Image 1 (cartoon, rainbow, N blue to C red):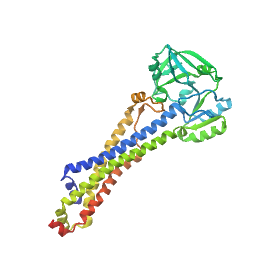
Image 2: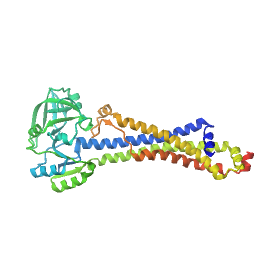
Image 3: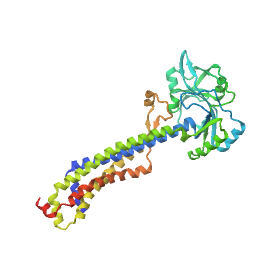
Image 4: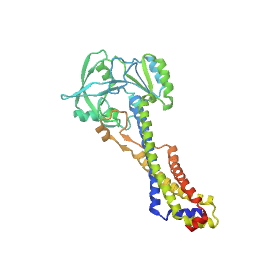
Length: 399
């Protein structure tokens, strides 16, 4: 009977109930979609860092600068046969890379680029299944950004000019074997791939490398491998895990999480005030009805339950609809993704971020968000319910 009365009372003023319901729907959906964006961005950052920049563990020469656009070759790493055997035994795959910052020259036009010398084992550490290639990867390959800025096509000649490891200047002309889009803004704006042998000859590196990147079976073993390699190359190399490399970006994500909390909190506060208003107005409009029910034997506890139930119904229905909407949006963009290529190109992004963002929400938030909506509805119903249940029956009937 109480459930029937609660449902009937909510339909008396439909628009007021609908507005309160929409506030709950918006709050829960916003919470889920916001968490989907944050979860997707976090996973995007981690995968992009691991799959394009550092692997699970990366070693650089001691004192190597952390500025991403600066890749000096004054100090390089020598990987001995014993080191190679150790790396092969500990890692699923590993590779040496030569990162340098030459000037690319095409038909008199020049551009400072990020060049990466890569060997044949590089593909085992940095997956290439999602790359889009025009031409071939066998040779010098320029990114889409470089191709656009220098008007480079497959078959054109590009001159790479830079300072060698001993400190002299050198320049070599290479045919462009391909134009690639990796989907990673860190490379696609100004990147050039050079076969490791050609990069070694250009820089006079004598078989040395600037980076050693390691891929493991899982992310969880990165810290142990980092510590072991740091002990082996103490004083020679700075060894960092993927977690170390993404610390600053994760701090930024924490700030975004707080900002989302404030936004969703404001929306849910609006929902709470709407529900409290709906139920409180209903209480004052139904004073005579409440007195009649009390005179017929309904206790104060039952009156309290009646008005609380109205809040629960609004919260449950609104939370269910909000969860369906939020999870539907997250599910769609979790499968199809959001293409950020144009935004990154216009913004000049130089971070290890994939150009396609896939939303992802954790099971915790999928359960917690609807419960938060119901809890807000119940809490906002307590005061109006207590007001209604405290009305004296005799005075209520005479009202």
